[in-house]
Length: 123
Image 1 (cartoon, helix red, strand yellow):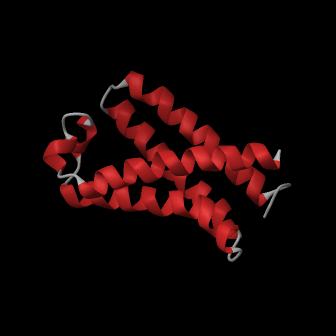
Image 2: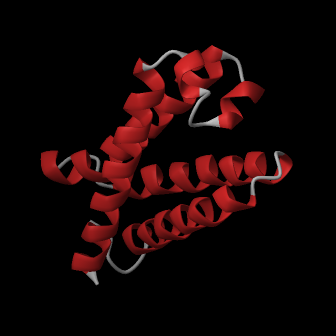
Image 3: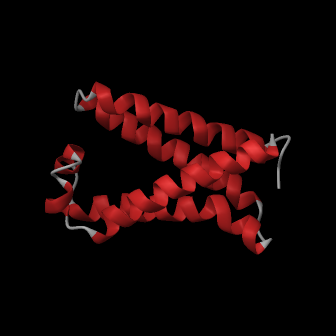
């Protein structure tokens, strides 16, 4: 199970590091073409979401690599659960059903990582 958790963490880290870097480095106007939800938020909020995604992605991997503050891995996973619940709520409000399913899959993966790292497979 520990290997499965590492795979989940690696996948989540790659997804959120990429998505966060995209939001942090691209202007809001460029993001609008692929992410309609950015119309509902100001540029500063979009950048904040990107930064949170980057921090969570790093938090899933770096504590173990650096062998310090290992509980941060579980807390990063919890942060992703909260962030993705907010994303799902935004997609529901915007009536974007095709975006809700992948968002809920990310919620589930992050929840499994949090459960495993807080519980029986804590680092």
